Image (cartoon, rainbow, N blue to C red; front, side):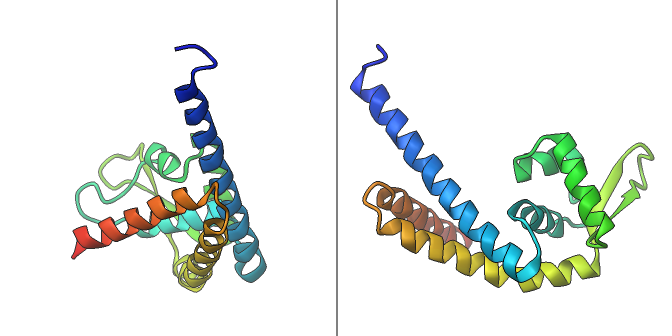
Length: 157
């Protein structure tokens, strides 16, 4: 394949459209979460990921797993955890079976804020997708996302 190969050009255009869609969705959600809950998208995502932990086998995530889930480096994730800990939304404690391990849990205040912010996140996502669906370049990607939602719901039924 050459750099002018139509397949590569189409692939690059698809990637640009996907990147544009992601950026628009994230910016729309960011504005809504900041305005109503003083949360960034990353902070919301971190609270959401950590709120899904449990006490059973494999229930607590290591910092690398958390970083992967929120798509940040480990150092950026640690800084984010520290900010939310300073706000009283997260707490850290030593792993009871491995004193070298440190776990992070969402506090009651963090769970309350997450519950308040979840409808804002969901409605902002819906608004951003509806807006993107009106753009001919982005509409096919929105349809794919909608089909993923439908197939995920069918698997859970």
